[in-house]
Image 1 (cartoon, chains in turn orange, brown, yellow):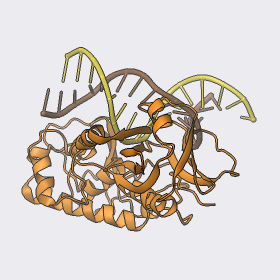
Image 2 (cartoon, rainbow, N blue to C red):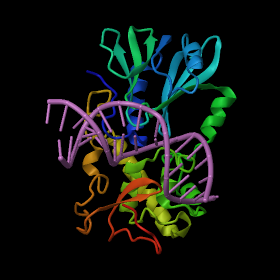
Image 3 (cartoon, rainbow, N blue to C red):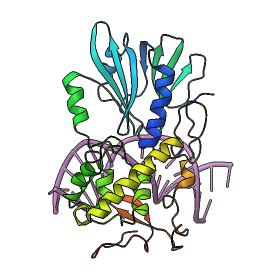
Image 4 (cartoon, helix red, strand yellow):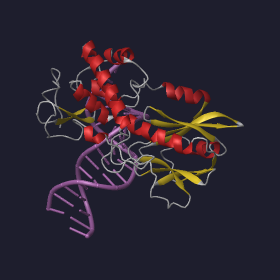
Length: 290
DNA sequence: CTCGATCCCTGGACGC
DNA sequence: TGCGTCCAGGGATCGA
């Protein structure tokens, strides 16, 4: 079975990139004939989705941060795009009409080749919106730099002037787009920076190192089709492999790969954060939670 | 500006 | 086995 499914792990940049590439191969060029909606509370404007999609062609599938961006065109339409955020459990996959409809299927787009593009999301933490023109442009403008497309200077500028904790900054999509909990923790471990360290307190060398390892980790994760614990399968039906390379994420209580110290988990910026208390020294005055 | 708290939602893990 | 409870996560929002 061909499936674009995210298992237990939330889709972050590498997982969304994997899905986007698979979808680009599978559905680019297809026309959307019709749309059937189920629950719509995760859709910005369900009526717009229902009205605008039919008749449009999926020109290109891109990743934008953690969003999938389906660029839609049509002879009598101004170009627009369907933004899909997979949230935690979202899946977007092209399936044969004959394929039984999975539970929690909320959007079905009929394609011109007899298949359907289905959005399945148990928790509905995802988001979907049809946007076009100036509205689309402004929406995308809200997000920060893509780590893959920017450079160390831009990263340093966006991080270095901020007094928020580095973990919060990495997760803040208006600062850097695409990074989530896994890759934030992994890159902080590799750069030996405590998640509660303030952005502005990082030395230039640390910021440079952090950007370098973040880029390296994201690229490697993309090459390995992302992280999955259970059943993330991509276009070729292969699971992601990057979870085997996790150094701190999900390893609370286990030995640090560098120094053997037990990996700890604390809450930083409201998010569970795994780190090595020896390799990643806490900033002065930092009070642990959990 | 930055913080924590709260809500959204459901499946899975865990305790009894 | 079957309950109940807790937790996970990204993002929006709100008050401090």
